[in-house]
Image (tube, rainbow, N blue to C red; front, side, top):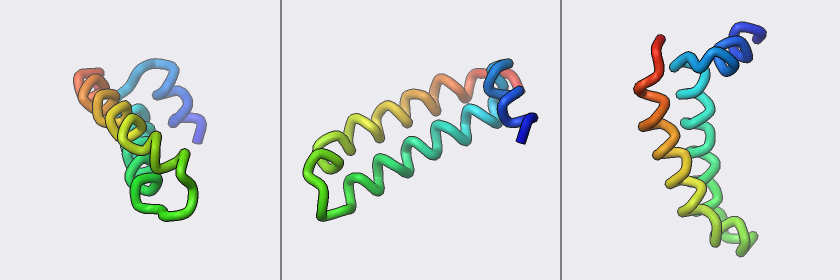
Length: 62
């Protein structure tokens, strides 16, 4: 677990890709749920932020 946070602090690809993937998954979940309107409203921007973060993070060193 500490290697995950060390990877975040040192801008390593593995840890940040996991965070970006988690943000994308949260955005997709927000898009598919039928109960909370504000979650549906912000689902696209959440997915977009995760996708852009994933593209940026893919250029980090391993």
